[in-house]
Each structure stands twice: as C-alpha cells, then as structure tokens.
Length: 235
Image (cartoon, rainbow, N blue to C red):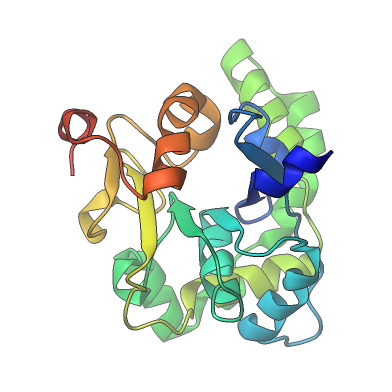
C-alpha cells in the first residue's frame, strides 16, 4: 500500500511487567498514523540499560518514528532516542530524570532495598484471580492477569533495579510528558513540565483512553495541545 509512505509510524512501549494490550483501546486516525506495539524482551545477565535499549531498536522498522512509552517504558524510549532520530518522543505516567522519582524510590536506590522486593508475587496472579472474593476484587484480579503478563524473574529484577537506579540527571528538552494528577506510582508533585490529565492515575492509558484518543493525534503532530484545552486540563 503506497499510502504507508506518508503515514506517521507510532511505536508504543508498555510499562514494567505489562504487555502491549494496555494500548488496546487507543485509536489513532488510520489515514495519518500507523500503530506498532513493542514488547519486553528478556535482558541478558547484568545487561546495561543502554545495551537493552539498543537491542530493542531492531524492532523499529521505520525512519523518524514517534516513540511513546508508559511508566518504565517511558524510560526505555528515552534511552532508545539516544541512538536514533525520532519525529516525537512522548512519555506517559513516567519520569524524565532521577529528580522526578518519588522519595521512596530514591531511598530504595540509596539503601539497596530494591533488591529485596518480592518479584515472585506476580507468579501468584493466577491464584489470586481464583481466590478473589467480591466483584471489584475479581475484576481487578482479571486485569492484573491480562495486562501484567511479563513475569520472568530475571526481567523483573533487572527492570526494578534499572528503574530506581536510572542514570539521568537532566531531562531531554524534546520529551513531551503526559501525566495524571492522581498518579500513585509517580506522584505529580515530583514532576515538572507536563501535560496534566485531571483525575488521571498511573493506569490512565487504560481507563482514560478516550482522553488519549481525543488529544494524542494533535500532540503527535504539533507537540502540544490547543491552548484552550491545555488550560482546561492544567499545566
């Protein structure tokens, strides 16, 4: 299809332990955009974050793509952009540098407590679903099982370590940051220079997908949103 040459290719990177189904409700106009979904690969033993980012580049098949990353995936796409030219770099529910990490993560990095996090708990997601009592708990358990499918222990330990020890002192100037004011993982009070989504939580790419479907095309094309809308949603 020759029209594909004119399409803007948009690559999505999910969050820690999540698969690309977190983007299942995101829709971009097909006459302008082509959506591609990246998945986590298992890191090599003690692999550096930069090395991992380079290995992921083999899945980028187009020049000047748009890279969009959620949470830890936002850190990954920022690392990938060190090695390729991109049309737009967008992070969602993530951070742009170490200073934006919440205090508890910085303490975990300084003390080494991140090494003792029980990553094996994800192995019990299936059992949790079977034992869940009450509709809300059952629904939450099904969501965990559906979206948090990357449970390889080497990957989880590697991801948590590189999340809290991310070596980034200054934010890139070209990062477009979309963040919810109710984000419980990366509280907005630590974040600077972002497009605020009122009521948005850390999983807003799933439960606030209508906001993204409405505004993401313009953000990709222009790097911002109209002033009137911008004022309505905050920063």
